[in-house]
Amino acid sequence: MNLSVLRSLRGHPTLRGVWGLLQSCSIQTDFVPRDPNDKPVRYKYPASYDPYGPRPPPSEKIIQLAEQIAALPPEEREMIGPTLIYKLNLPKLQHISVEGMDAGAQGGPAAGSKTEEKKAEKTAFDVKLEKFDENAKIKVLKEVRAITNLGLKEAKDLVEKAPAIVKQGVTKEEATAIIDKIKAAGGTAVME
Image 1: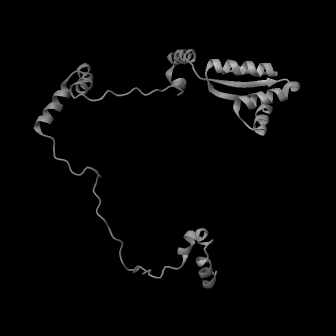
Image 2: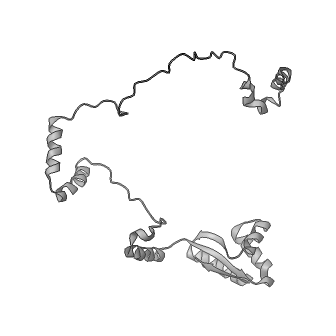
Image 3: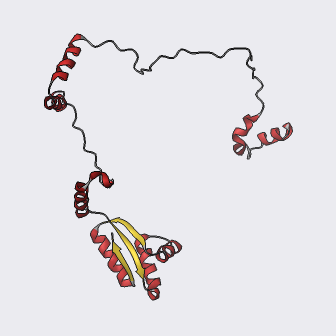
């Protein structure tokens, strides 16, 4: 673009917001080229970076304490952590829940029994529309719309791609109620 067009666009009130960063695309006039014969600047970097700066060496008392801890048998060394937590009144660490994480084959046979226990404790269920009678398609569609609060097109797509999950994360009572409603409308639904 030539310079006159740029000036006219820059001054236009409606195009000022659209133009944005392109205003600064002109050639940099204050650029000073580097001398090609200059050598690059070499900086001295430390061998290892310590963000906290240099530390003083440990005191003799700390060195003796470390030697005493290293000389302890493993059973007594395991008790140091909990004892220090108690003596220093440190806050108790919170347990991190791993529910929903798949241990896979790493856990061996014991992991299988844990998954069986988790299935017994399951509180959130998914309702899946398996199939429906073609004659009752409109009734099932209306019921799915009422359950999911979807629009007509979205509910129709969901019903037509059965088997599909209709509702996720509901309680067992809600899931059985939804299954009964779909069954009364002419569809077949299951709880997962």
